[in-house]
Length: 248
Image 1 (cartoon, rainbow, N blue to C red):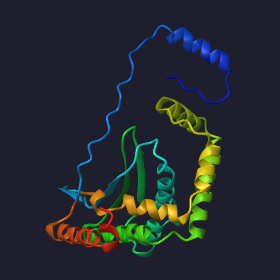
Image 2 (image 1 turned 120 degrees about the vertical axis):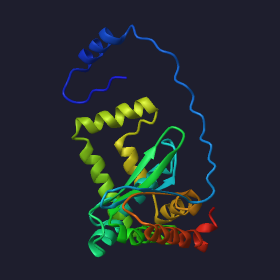
Image 3 (image 1 turned 90 degrees about the vertical axis):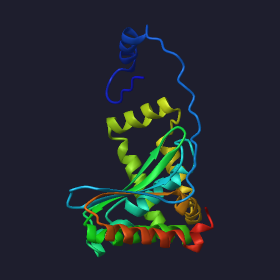
């Protein structure tokens, strides 16, 4: 597939593409098999390393790229880590001062996906960081987002979409990737879909996504057995929460 965006003549582009690639032929793409989901409890991996900090990724099994739940997931990501005023930035960086940054990412593939939260901190702060992240996830699962907070996040998301129209690179990614993966969406469609979401929609998704049986934690760095035990204790508290375990 060839993708181009910017100031060019479409007819010249198509002619050049045909001259170079018209003779190319290939077979059909393989059909993706649905994933075999076997996880029934939280999973953890701790890797010792000589780094001066501990690097943490907390991941949850999520959804394929064609799943309608991707849109509320995008807003949940921004509520948690989307800007300097997002929940985890305010808690971990501004209030506690235990991280320089904290990020959340979405990966959506044809048959599956994941949602992850990543940060680095000192080993002595590792359990605190895990506790605060889990507390925010539990809040999202049991309490509806304030309508004003949701509206602010929607406005930021819509601004990002409108701003992307000025970037040839962003337009190449949006329409080229969308065409390749058969999920082409106009920017106006995304704006309309996000506008229709309610606090109840986000709470429902958070209940499903952040269930303990869906949780995976990886820690790499300068942790010790004491820090490991404290982190596992925090995960145990989260898993024993009545509001969340009912969702397993």
